[in-house]
Image (cartoon, rainbow, N blue to C red):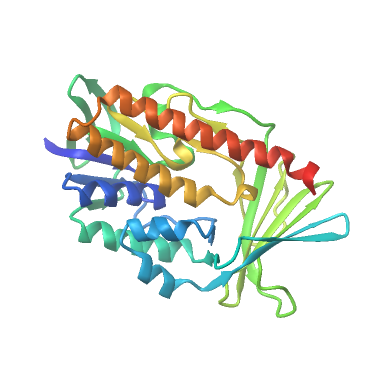
Amino acid sequence: MRAVDVLVIGGGPAGLSAGIHAASVGLKVLVLERAQTLPAGPGETFHPGIEAIFGSLGIAEITKKSATARHEEILIHRCGRTQRVKYGPGWCGFQLRRSQLNQILQARLLETGGEVQFGTVGYDLCVDKQGFRVKTKPGTIETRWIVDASGYSGWLDQNLEETMTQVSHPIWLEYGYRCTDPKESNSPSLKIGDMGWHWQAPLGDGETAWVRGSDQVPKRSAAGSKLIDGTWRFSKRPASANYFRVGDAACRLDPRNGHGVLRAMMSAIMAGHLIKATNTRQIEAEQAAQIYTGWLHKWFQYDADQLQNLSRIL
């Protein structure tokens, strides 16, 4: 049997960020990723606030160098009108490939002493007063804390037989990539119409990422595009005395929110901070869970309210 302090399920930005933060304070960390390589996915446009997160994880300089483009505003098109939403003086968003971000985060995790195993799935979760035991094909892992960063698959939900709470009508997303039109603006843009919305973001390397959302299951409009469920959901209990759900495993909104990766990485860092505080007996485990739950739910509700008001303020 192998023992670790923190077992992270999922090797995306949330999982790797949680691992980095926990390993950097001296905890023994193992990240399990079911895919054979680091997972890629939509979400290459990052809010300027993520720069502080990159700094706290020790990857500020390399992410600046790796950014394919920076932007000062987002364009919103509706009813023949265009609104320019600027971030503010000196603030610029990032365009950075998710695959590149994941590689940067993985390298940083290894630098801090953490470990990641690919092609490994945890199953048969056992809970006791000391923590968890998780079976994998290589063997059983014993851990004090689990950080569920498994995204839409909801690893803890499956193993604890829990479900997320749906708070919106069904929303379907189609996403893909296309060649950038030289005539287009370099700024990301959101186009809102009667049949749904369309987001696009030039990545600065000759390719544009796009996402369109609809209440109806869309037919694929381009070769190679993918469909995912974008319905808003949240976990009523994202934390307990020995686990934390982070990123999309804890709550999810559709990409119009623009904070998906930022919230994923911030929730991971918050979980790591509270694990450290619990481990050093600064606070009790149940108190840490209450702090995390209140913080996450407040942020989710604020962003959900902003999205609901989007149509009325334009």
